[in-house]
Length: 131
Image (cartoon, rainbow, N blue to C red; front, side, top):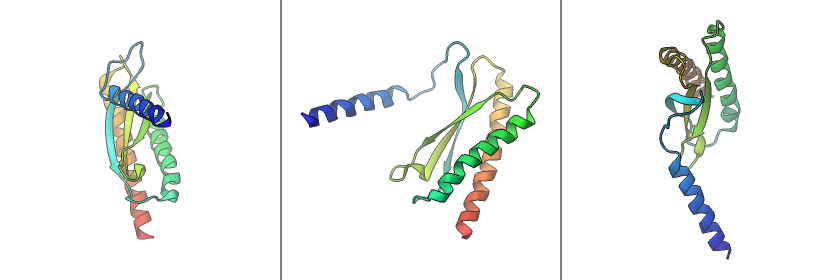
C-alpha cells in the first residue's frame, strides 16, 4: 500500500515538474522571466557560502534598484538549485519583470542585475578558494 502511495505521489510530482518547463505568457500584468543565468558554485556543500549567497543576491538587487530610484527599477528575481548530487553546486537565477512593461527597460535592468551578481559571486568564490 505504501509503495502505491509513493508511486502515485512521485508520478504526480513528475507531471507537475514536466508541465512547468517552458516560459508561458502571463496574464494580467503578472511577472515573467525576462532572462535567466546559471552560476556554477562549489561541488561540495559549503554552509558558510550558502549563508552568504542570500546577502549576495539581496545586495545585487538593492544596488540595481537604488540606481533606478526614479521608478524604472521594478523587477524581482528567483533562484532555483540546478546541481545533480549537491543542489547548490549550480544555481539558476531568473530576472522577473512585469508582463506588458517596457521590454528594453526590463532587459537593461536584468543585464545590470546579472552583471552585479556575477561580480559579487565571482569575488565571493575567489575569497572562499583562497582560504
